[in-house]
Image 1 (cartoon, rainbow, N blue to C red):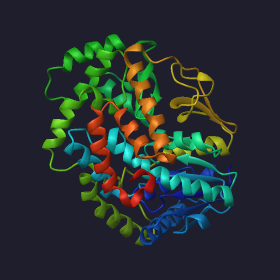
Image 2: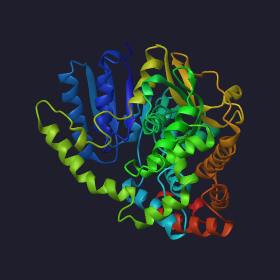
Image 3: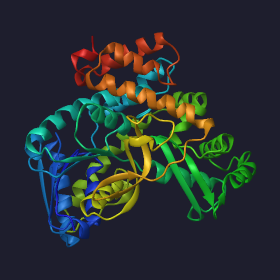
Image 4: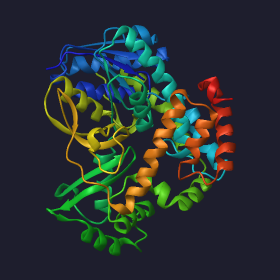
Length: 433
């Protein structure tokens, strides 16, 4: 049982109640621990703190929960930092989605120009976070969920010695829906995915121990003209069959980009707009439950459901309790664990995690049909990390034009200046000149 002091940066976010529920669900693994919730929103912090304190009590967990708006004070003496925050909140995500569309480019939270701007905002916060950690908790590890997790991790790895593990459930959740569309049972499958975050592919795909691709091909023939099956489910199964590798959901923006762009233009709200329409109800529910003697979160009224960021809790538990667990982690490709990618590039791989860290399991190379686009995105990731950490406008434009969404240098320059103007309150002067 690990008794740790954990700082949760983003502890006043709409996901924080569910994240604390995840931590408390691991009560036996963290008895006697302390969690410090850190955020700029004092009222929301108090709601989450109260929810967590009462939920831990009901679960019989010995857990101290405190909250502060002072990041440096909150980081004092911590063993671990869980980072899951969104600089600019959903209002800036909405701009990340809308502004690229004015330039004929897909606007998306983590991909392309929208994801790039989020990375610029996020890395500025990480620079201050790491400076504080070096002063008050130099031995702490970061367990990161702040998007885009690959660019954030790349920037931190390139410029600091602070240990960072970044997590995303993608390799665990991308493939089952594709199998279900084909009429297959995910419980009978073994699928291993690798690549860069939100852009991974299957390198192993077995069903009852045999290659799954013939079965996916049969499933595609059954549903290709079946309009009772969701169109995006059919498209992703089609992509898996065409490329002979199961894709991350986010590849829909690359292989069906024109279709997505037209459909997004026709929508009344972007994804951020949809979320913003529900945020007030999330917090109304959290307030109701915080006032209850025995709070119980309703998954229909909680951001992301009842349990959030559980993969990060699993990785922390494996590390601090020194118990072996096989989990996907974003980390440097040390030793060329994932063939075809530089050793100093952050990649997403399945790893064995224990008290000594995260160790990649033996990796197969990505199939040639999908390796090129993933390598291109890995190179963009590296350029984005340079721009975010200490780069200039020229570095930012260079990163943008390297992304597959951006068709020309002129578009990259005009689009970046438009986005930078909207983000001026969150960016350093070097990126605005």
